Length: 428
Image (cartoon, rainbow, N blue to C red; front, top):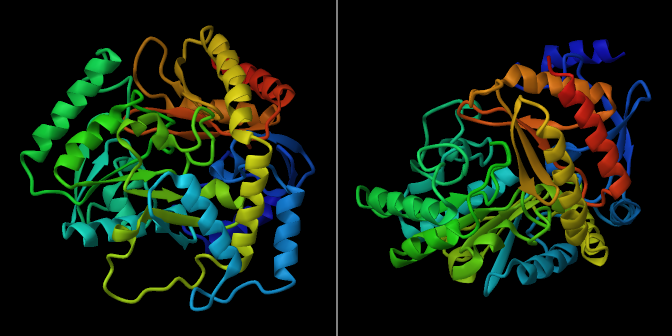
């Protein structure tokens, strides 16, 4: 049956639509931190639909909210007042830390970043964008144009002029050998030099932790230091929280808070986890920025009632059960367990991350050279052991990505670590 579905998939869907595994997997249902495939095999899920199943599979509170809302009305568009949308916007505006915040809902992180770029360029009347090397911001024409990862950027054409800044990858590149303070100073000097050679950009867009790039991150405080330089020139800061938001990093509710010394970002984007699998994204910005557009706009599906009901129920569950604290506690145990394992595996260059957002970088032993074949082999071996994980990386890097639902318990973390240990030790 799976082979038949794979053949049908290949017959009607694009060749570039990637599938994991030599024998692709059909997931039929899930519960808690586990999913089952079409053969009835159960897996511990350490990737959550690419960091999207944030709380748990088939979470009763979310399932009931979706069912109840579907029984009333599913959709009406933003042309009509929408109580669930207003209620979720109120919660997000308050949680964002952005003063006088306005919220616009979209259907994805790509669309959220697209909207943030529209707002920034319209507000600043500039089409120049600063982005980070190794970044990923989505698959739309404008988001691809600012993505600093060649593996996810199929065209060099863009409506924007993009300039790439140092700093998103702490342990690689020309500043890797420096101390954290010296690293930040060097990146700030590089930014100042770059700005001396161009017309004033509209904004810097940055992921606090680079997701597709392999869960890489700068030292805490880098973007706060950047903000001083940007603010002097009126350049906006866009924090892409599509993967880091809602407490996943454990230490902070938003990734930008690790860089919050000079205040919150001007614009913040979110998506993925808030819907727990429903299609929800959005943008938060100061009112003067959000309201700068001088033409009409709506969203047909952004903020639709059924997705807003899911988002509200999911956010309430996350806050009431302190899943940020759980990510900090269980994630801390998991990363230390994986570091102990990795110390005995020559192919592991680094285990990095925070909370339940952990990357394991794989290289050819004794070198800094990426080894995507071995990373893929570990992915396969983990699946054989009953564990689903992700992968990523860019610019001669290969990394495994670990991002389970934030309700992961200690026993499940230990189970997943044991499977990963066996998978890593199976490397020839």
